[in-house]
Figure 1: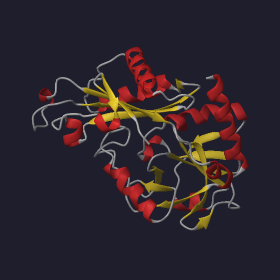
Figure 2 (figure 1 turned 60 degrees about the horizontal axis):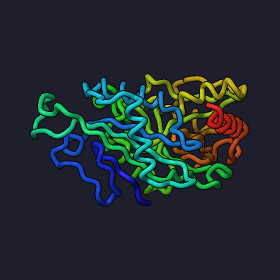
Figure 3 (figure 1 turned 30 degrees about the vertical axis):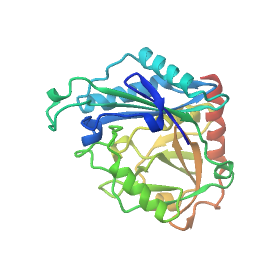
Figure 4 (figure 1 turned 180 degrees about the vertical axis):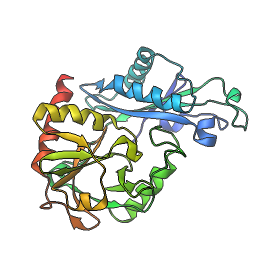
Length: 288
């Protein structure tokens, strides 16, 4: 699917977009990003995504060279150029160290690069929500917080890429990653929830994971629809023995997981708590 790309203000089709080879985002993966989507043509939870972008950048001493309102204007210009018609938009914002010499010295990259990618949002197929999806617990361990902290939404996605590729080889929709202690942390591109006795449980930030925007939002949705949502340390058996399980992300909302490592979760069908949270989430997209 073609995309429209804005590289430091130059807008082009994806095949024509270029960034210098000496950009440290390309050389070293030094950069941060956010993925957003629109509802009704408006970027959803934009302020929260920008808060996380700035937090990620600060954790790697990267300057964010724009105000939120400025970025929103650039996104709007890029969306207009994309001519999406009635389609909702998928938006990725990337900020890198910028162009510099072959060195890790921060003084070598005084001007960050900004890339905005816009293309039509593609939702999971309806069957994913009706029947649920399968997942596997992968062997790739989530980054230790003392290495590349998972709280940084970094352009360097090798950890997640290797985990996702293992899941794809197994024929799964998603891969679930453990942390260095053997606790469940998160999925390769989403956050994990299990449901037990009517309560939706998700691993705590201390388990070493990216604090997802949809994950955070679901605590509020749960309060709206009368479903307790809490953090809890989760192990493999907590997932295998769950009544329900689901994953959350910006572009996929809340997708039920009905099978993990070949084992059925609950009765092997999407459960009522997942359905209630998904419905509550979608209601909030209309009024938020």
